[in-house]
Image 1 (cartoon, protein in one colour):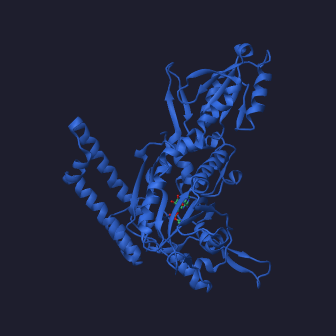
Image 2: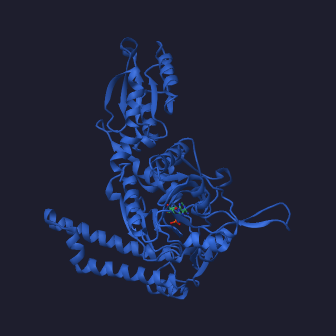
Length: 511
Ligand code: GAP
């Protein structure tokens, strides 16, 4: 993986991601997707949507509005509880999330553990057993105990809204401000993350609204509509992809934490009592979905929550090894019947499912899978970008995206413009464009054109040369191996299609 700064500048240089309102010096934590970024993003959406809605007969999709009745957020608990604990450093005047400062402190201890493991690996060589070492080495054990105790205390204090203790913990750990280096902190305060706005023309008739901070509530509010119109029986799921908005206090790390972002969420409605079984199943299914894209198992890990959100009885994150370490990529929550019950109470409408088999009415429990589309983009993009040394001593930057997600699937490159090669290239392009995103490029030497395609991840380059005119065959060059093979023009379409077959990608991981 390349250095994070290089990843960000590559994303800009090659039309993947731009800072929003760039010409006005940008808007903090808001980003735009460029000509290649939008294609990659749409392909990620498509891969998720197909895996949820298309191949599961018991899951349907919806697209609900961003604006929702304001009582939604009172009922969901977001008005009262969707807060981050913030703290200011009096010297630098910088604002931080108190919990993140403490978690970052723990990450530093984790790094120390890693160093101990590397040292021990070197010392013991082949005989080294990491599990045993971590469980028995006194230093590593004490580091792990320290992390556990800190996180436990943090979870307890946040749960009880004991903000004084959170500050005390920061002081006890002697955490300093990364900018000023001082320990001169304010008290910790709660800060609501929702953006408010108004609907309506006049000040008397206008209504205060929020921009939705999660897409999930649109699903809960439509539970009855979907269940009745689809006649689906429990267990069943509703999926949706859409924008969400949060006034994040710390907005760093590029598109990892944004103020406007997209979520891909699925709520699976189950019988009360069966939630644990479904929670485990969805944990496994979602990890398999990630693994199907081929970014190595070691880059993922589960992190079970100590501190549960106000609506959950079980929760786990799938964490990914981002350029800045393991961080949350997706959340899997057992949300109990909290949301449906609460909307029932606030709306006065009965929100229940009638089970004909057992002849009983009940409020379904919910298992939620929730992944940030932009985070998924960052995970894939950062891991796919590599710098490789070539045999001739030169190097190349190559974006080894999973083929099924690449913005462009094939580039058509006539070796020279003359002798009818351009014309033939144009013809092949016009034929392939109905099936795939195609680029036609006849400028510069062929090596430079290959590099341009490597940089945006195009998996296949088709070169047309003089021999093509004679045998109707082109050279197909593979992005990753750079191996070349001759393929008949009439077989190019099938050759590419084979690499992009959704079933081949997902089927072996479908649990
Ligand atoms: N409905 C549950 C929910 O919204 P969450 O853990 O707050 O849970 C789910 O968010 C996912 O949304 C996260 O795992 C993350 O991938 C993404 N996400 C959350 N806040 C984000 C932000 N500010 N910027 C980008 N992605 C974000």
